[in-house]
Length: 375
Image 1 (cartoon, rainbow, N blue to C red):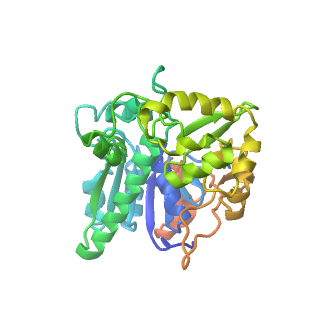
Image 2 (cartoon, rainbow, N blue to C red):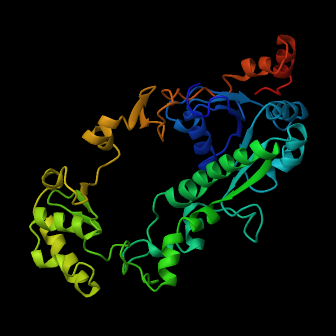
Image 3 (cartoon, helix red, strand yellow):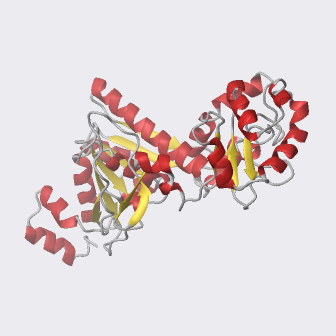
């Protein structure tokens, strides 16, 4: 493995959403990530979150399966799990037995509601976590319900990224203390933390609770999306006066708009006027007009279009792995660059090699398979 995390050993419990993405990012940057899955099966090249990982299939309902999982944990730096609170404990793989085997283990826990609190044991998804943080209420037009913003805000920004941040912080601290610890990454905590700027603006009277009435929520005519003549869209966002001046010049807007850009009383009428203007040309015609400028106006691309945009292509922001187009590893490092991402493994494909690394004989592996400990 190549990358800045080469040599880091991670055990990941099979799950969904933000925890697998965290494991993928660690593998992308060179960590050896061993995924404990429930059963063996064929490889799926579209299972991007498992790319570059090793896969071991264990029956964790058996004592021998749990013992093998603890053997893997004993040699790991990090464990990642994304179950409801108490599930790992009931399997015999909670923090206490794991850290008894490995006192330096960083035990990363990923949940929506957190390890404790009135909702800790209830189900939820990104939209529910965003709803509880105040973030969802702030998204969307004023005359419609808040729309689901995919599952980026809580699952991946508030979840995956804060889990990774916690793991890296705990690894740094372990370098000083020599001790591991549990990282409780809750999506409601992470999503709330991301809104520090808005919380500050609210305290200072610069942000209101009314949706689509603020600088960044679609009220400002110079920060939003506009439909073009071909039904596609343009993203417009020149907040700073010098960038707004470029938009005015290149789009042919009235010059006097520069003087009172931040006058909120002008915003509704100007948004309607800008909408009429941007509907006069196609998206790509506007993109050509603004190309290379500081007007902060760019085409809104589809997932299919994005890899072929000249900038994205020049940076190699997307790669093809096993015939599937996907994002390249990020971020980038000058001395320890990540290698090309490996394909997703077949579930359980690495069971035997990993068990041999643990010192198990071929006869013992065969016996465990016969006993259906290896699935």
